[in-house]
Image 1 (tube, rainbow, N blue to C red):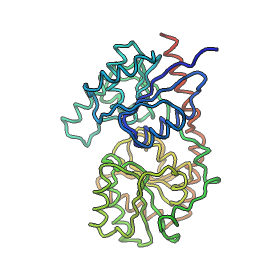
Image 2: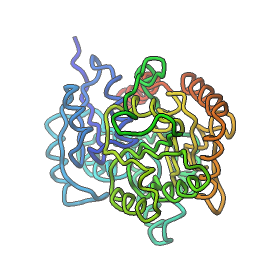
Image 3: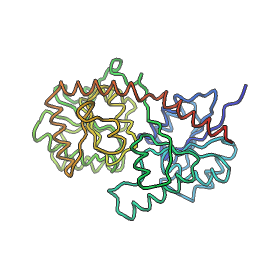
Image 4: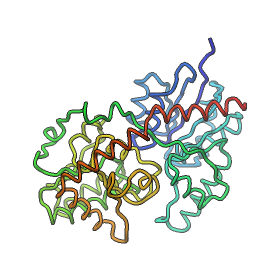
Length: 375
């Protein structure tokens, strides 16, 4: 019997975000008879703990920087004994710190783009430097994977030579099923049953725009006091968010919670899910909320606009004053429970049809086999 093929999976961090959830789903569904996945993370965190519980060898070499030359020797030394057939890097930090090892050890490198590191809100200098970095990574990778068609297209706009295969993110449709999930989250967090509960389940980072959501929620609650906001997650803007809620005078209407592993139960408790990102690849949190038949509100950015069809399975907001548009959409869904239900039911139907973690994994395995057969 043939031994499973060693494949190195690399991810930027051990905290759980979209790319990390993608990796966990991939590891849950990968054919362990064919492949032996080993994971390298650049920070500790709950994702690392979850992988180790799954029996997957997971190493941590600390860095929070892309192109961190100081760790490249450690990465190469870690990889060498395994004689990896492939390296699969998830995100810019992972790919940039694996380029040297892949080249020195003659290992094909797959780069999955979980949203570009460049976006128009950056200064011209930062934007151009990020584009240069992404151009280098995508050129040196054996294969690039885009998690959405829109993200592929935005890459081509800035990198004329960019090519990729599109494999949409998928989720566990058994785990995220409103028919089988019960929730005590409201009671646990002392959130009244009679309020419309708005949910944000994401990292507290600038690109997810938690501070913008708080400002929008302040505008919404000025019109409807029967609203409550539940913000679940951690990140560098968490403390700033808590301070802003007090400053805006809405802290009694906002509940902050650290990262939780019971995401289906959290989603079951809410009425509306909001994701006001300034960029996305294909947001897994949004897919999970839609799978739980929740009405969703998102900004008109890559990935999100590919999932949400405005007024059919959710609401898209755009324009020069996003916080006001978000507030109006929140108030609209709070006032129309029948609309919430209709949007949520259509959202779930769309997810069931198009976004399966098992199918995502089979498509990724086809990329693996194609590269292995060439080497």
